[in-house]
Amino acid sequence: MQQAELISPARPVAETVPVQPFDYAALTPADATKLREVVTAIRCYQKKVGQQIIAIGELLLAAKQGLGHGHFGDWLAAEFGWGERTAQNYMRAAEVFASKSASVSYLPPTTIYQLASPSTPEPVRAAVVERLEQGERLSHDEIKSIVRHGKAAERRAREDAKRTPEQRRRRQQVEARRQRQLERHRQEREAELNQEAAARKDAARLIVQHVGDDTERLVELLKICRGIYAADLAAVRAPGLVDRRIDGLRA
Image (cartoon, rainbow, N blue to C red; front, side, top):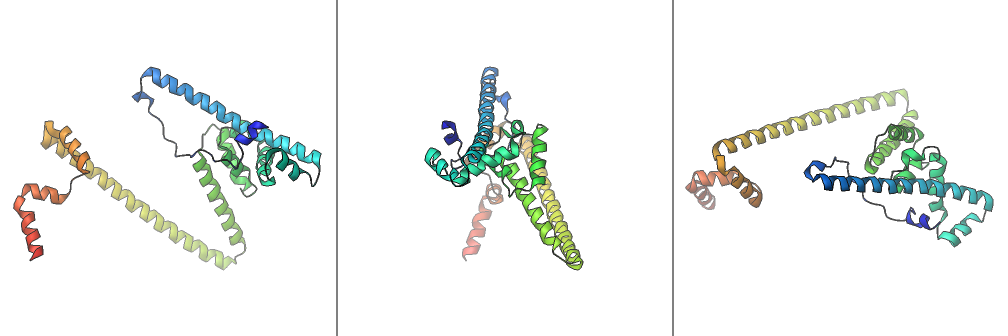
């Protein structure tokens, strides 16, 4: 049971970040091969951790049944220094994922415990497992978001069931109005981003067209000064103009 301490729910887990493809083309072929071997090895260890969680849970279930009521907590504290809540994480994972360990084994312990938790709606859990079984590699943050939205949807459904038909109709109208507002904001933001991208493209074209061989030097200068402002350009084009404006403000 020594390995159990290494994957205890009380231990911190590695931070997860949104998945972005790594560009191995930037490395030498030899370095790329070595790094891919490292990835394979780490994923193998990750898989073992997930399998160990489920295996420990199965052993704890058997031990709890054998000890009988009233002794399990004392045994956990004496042998592992655990409380029953820690053991419940393992046992719940075993109960839920015993037949699906291959699909969830690569997930971080925290994610396995969250998916197995009784507070996670069964339809949400089933949907996540189905995606995993289809070969999709979901990150901890992605699964956390799916579970959060699933819980919110279930809560709204329970609240909606308590409302009268007229209350439900009004709520649907409010939600429809909110969705229209969100869609309008999304479209406006998308238009702003497209406009900004087009402006950047035009600016880059003008720079290359007029600066020519000095483009690389300009790029380096922009990195140092963190950009250039309209006032800077005005000062270069008409050196006395900015000074006159400042004097006017001081008067």
